[in-house]
Image (cartoon, rainbow, N blue to C red):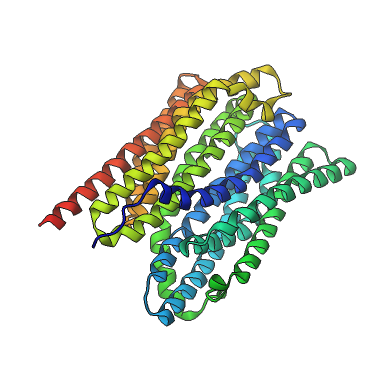
Length: 455
């Protein structure tokens, strides 16, 4: 079958709206980190660690419903309008069910992880602040995962444009709520711990606002509204099983990826609050950059789902176009970080001690290499998911993270006492190993299928 090759414009037109939503979403936690700055290094360290724990579970919840977009794209390609409508509604209902169950488990996990920190040889103030903020962030998992289901539904239907407007408004709402709740906390004389928890509560409330606003926009869209169905039915069992089968490996892959960063944060918290504070800021900056890579990953996955039936040559050509696009983006970001590192860090660490700023500046340089590996890896996971391979990502992360990454960060950071620098070098080694394995897997898969087609 002859089809028009996927162009860079196709990649960016689909990836950028998703990336915009991701960036707007991470702007919530970025605002939170900025709001932590006046509260001191301990608040940045404890609040930042709570965000890492939350992001650990949030990422796994998102992974469980990521396949929704692929199933929606497949259902939307059905010619029979009756069957198409029934299939689309079933996918949406099933995704909501899977997301709700996952979020329920996630809330329990957040409390368990944060509570465990009290048992570790960590600064007691940092551990207490982490637990308080984690408790205020945890309920936000429910509106967050429901919003992600609706987001994948809109992307799968190729109508993601309204996503960005909603999430941009949510940034302003979050900033306003942060200021209001911090004022109330100060008025009540609750101290640093209550102020940090108030910042987390603000993010949870904004998640509810974002979900409500986007659902309203979908219901006003004449095309999307006819397929909106949120309450699961008995006949959805088979679709739920498909989502679980596709989502579970993705969730573990995403969770494994987040876990190595979470372990790094816990190790740094045990080593020093100053190093943890510097890590929190650099990790947040890296997280911002990473959101655009997620846009390329989801967009590339949908593009591959649409060209998979036309031949593996088209799959490989599309994969290269997506990869070249994300590498160009990461190259520009890397140049800015190297040239203007201190200015990039200023909004987060402008008034903090010089030691924290010095450590953060050096970590930022290491983050350039880390982002190339981590961003490419995420895009490769999305590309493989586009051809319904959700197992390779998990297999690669087992080797990259747990065989190479975690032992390396413990050896370099703790064993050799390189502290934050050693931990970040370990992260780089873990992500680089995973990226190499995934890229090789994609090449082998494509070449094998090409040979089969030639026969």
